[in-house]
Image 1 (cartoon, rainbow, N blue to C red):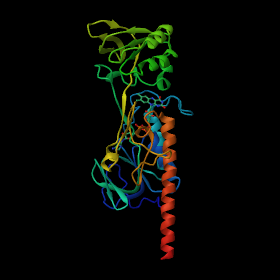
Image 2 (cartoon, rainbow, N blue to C red):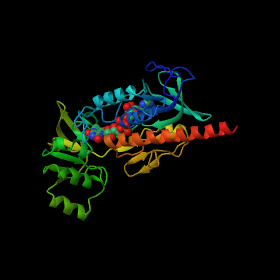
Image 3 (tube, rainbow, N blue to C red):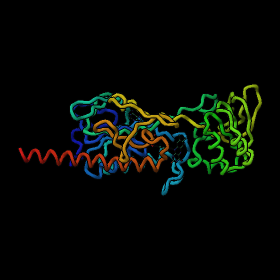
Image 4 (cartoon, helix red, strand yellow):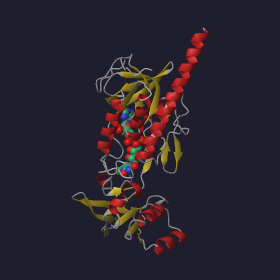
Length: 328
Ligand SMILES: Cc1cc2nc3c(=O)[nH]c(=O)nc-3n(C[C@H](O)[C@H](O)[C@H](O)COP(=O)(O)OP(=O)(O)OC[C@H]3O[C@@H](n4cnc5c(N)ncnc54)[C@H](O)[C@@H]3O)c2cc1C
């Protein structure tokens, strides 16, 4: 039972002593990291969360499909989660982990703000970054008028004129999901593979307009979409554009410790077992870094699971050590 934190430097951004050592260091304080912190701190573990403060959904005005906190702003949700974790003794550092290495059984983390932290176990809860299609204007409206997830913000654009930017063969599936929310769907084929006869039949039956050719620009006006502009100059008026980003796990630390990323059609991720354990000793992962499709509630659930699993792992290690000490 070691959550008194006496060995941790406690000032935000200044964990400077080489002796600083936690039972668990959690890298990333989003839904996954903070949920794990609560589970671990409630088990009387010394926990430090190092968080760079850039949750993936920060551009979005509200978090949806989150029972009990429907529509809360992403920043408010994190502030609430931080307060809850701190209430049980978690130490929060507003900083970035820049490098990780092993030292004996510990992992040593270097911080951008200076100094190092040492932990018996680490949890990667660093999330992912969305690689957006390289179309001028798309990044500017990301999270407000440029969307990817019908469950996160589909309701907010229901009934509106929704464009789907085709970049992969999944575009037709995305069309169908958003067609559930609006009768006014336009598929811009852009760089997607050629449509099959079945695709054409489906799109015609659903009343989806198909616009062939590459999109040159998404033109904005006052925070709204003014027009989708094709190469050649044709313009189309829409209210929202859906895109399919490539999801890339924020995995530098995992790779520095010797891990290798896995790939699936959505992007790259850190592979884990059901409770978040990676193939590296003492290293767990939860949330979008390991599950590219996890929404906030799912990321939080994974964090809670991983927190319990890490505590269980420490409990077993301590019991083995106690038995060995007694025998000696
Ligand atoms: C535009 C948009 C809108 C969305 N809307 C919704 C929605 O309405 N409902 C919903 O359920 N889901 C939504 N999502 C999905 C949601 O963002 C994710 O499910 C959630 O953020 C995953 O939580 P996480 O803890 O895994 O990662 P994150 O929330 O991304 O948190 C990761 C944290 O780790 C930090 N970090 C990364 N690297 C380091 C490092 N080296 N050192 C220190 N800190 C680091 C980051 O700064 C960040 O604070 C949306 C996603 C996007 C892109």
